Length: 140
Figure 1 (spheres, helix red, strand yellow):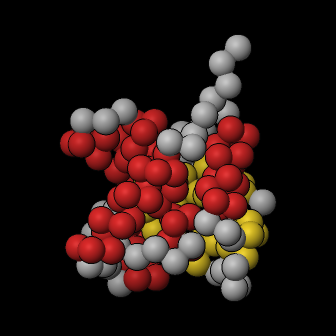
Figure 2 (cartoon, one colour):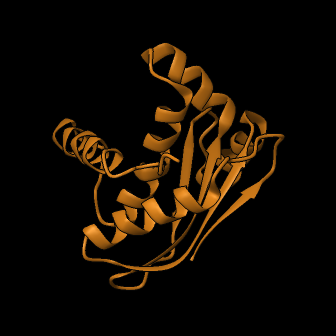
């Protein structure tokens, strides 16, 4: 089950659309959906987590804690909405697209994709693009 939690003023519109999309992403990677919690927060909140748990004193857009067991994906994905907004401006993309990229990025880590080397980062970017194309909002 995918759940959305908020530690800031931000609220995700159409939570069910995002949850359905992420479920499809997980299935497309031949994985099983467990408990995945998205926590939307601000820079200060995520910086504190970064310092406390990872000993990093830097701002970041996402931190994911992976509790997966075999092919069943479990984890907590913390996303700084402030950082996503700023990155969207820097990359000249919409906030919504950058948010989807970051959201799927966390799940892709749980699926086994890495991004520490240049080659792994390129594979991750390609996977993000592929999975973002799976996102559809039904038009009335």
